[in-house]
Image (cartoon, rainbow, N blue to C red; front, side, top):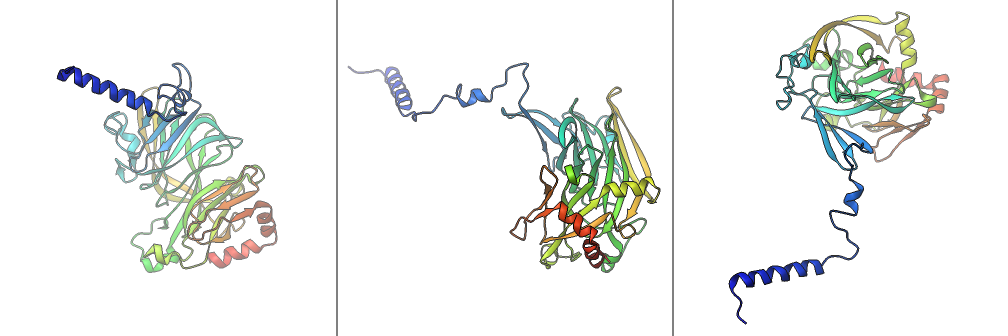
Amino acid sequence: MKLSKPNLLTLMLVAGLISIIGCKPKGSSSAAGGDAAKAYVAPGKYDEFYNFVSGGFSGQMSVYGLPPGRLFRVIPVFSVDPDKGWGYSEESIPMLNTSHGFVPWDDLHHISLSETNGEHDGRWAFGNANNTPRIARIDMKTFRTAEIIEIPNSAGNHSSPFITENSEYVVAGTRFSVPMGDKVDVPINTYKENFKGTVSFISVDKANGGMKVAFQIETPGVNYDLARAGKGKSHGWFFFSCYNSERANTLLEVNASQKDKDFILCVNWKKAEEYVKAGKGTKKAVKYAHNVWNESTHSATSTIENEVTVINAKDFPDIVYYMPCPKSPHGCDTDPTGEYIVGSGKLAAVIPVFSFTKIQAAIAAKTMMVIMKEFLY
């Protein structure tokens, strides 16, 4: 029997379909069932987890539901967003104000979530601006940026934001050293003497999350990177990875990697807090913007602050210690008990682990203070 062209085409399609079905791998499930069903969230139900993702050069933060992986919202933070009018409307423009004027972009690298007793409590998320040093607070009830505060005496805000066990402080370090105070046009050959770092402690109001630069600790001009707060037995301490103990300022990939060891910076922030409350800090003239979003009026205000309290680690040697660590660590963490502090291996292919109990013993024996004095001054 001779088939017409339409009938021949139909027969070929049916044969092809039978062939595809016949080649189906054994044990596989259809897309409509099996594994896909495990990721399905019915209307009115919540996802098991929520993933807050830094946007990098977009300057924004995104929220995904897991396991489905569905995108709930891209939250405008440090960069203009034409889709939502962020940075374009008169009401939102003040949120992107800085001491340098309106800055329409930034690089959001890291996110920390608010904590109670060392566990995430679902109140706020904090993100960093890497280019123009700032910290943002996102309200997790509204998924909106509620506040942005600029960090004075800082450069390269990669080393942030890190949060203490009960959200007492959001903490930020300087990745790059800067001349302090009113010094300008400082010769680079005076780097060791005039270029310093800071560790900034930004207090968080327990009731409404309002932020304030509570105090800064002036430190030697090395490069500070990822950090973690102590917890449990080490609560009241902070541990920063730091590199460039050579204090190089040219060809950093080569000149900042000469020594076999760098350091983990150990900060006794409880002791520093006591000094500040006792009036031991020095008031320094600075300029930085503090921007707040009002959810009731749906508008923002920007205030330029002009003062910050600074404690110089040189004058208070019992709040800052430098613990030798294999070359160029770029990360730091603490175990759930707070006993062990772990440094990352970057140029040194090792993962060093330190005991907080032994750190305390070294401080009591004055050995860590000797290290600090020889290294710093």
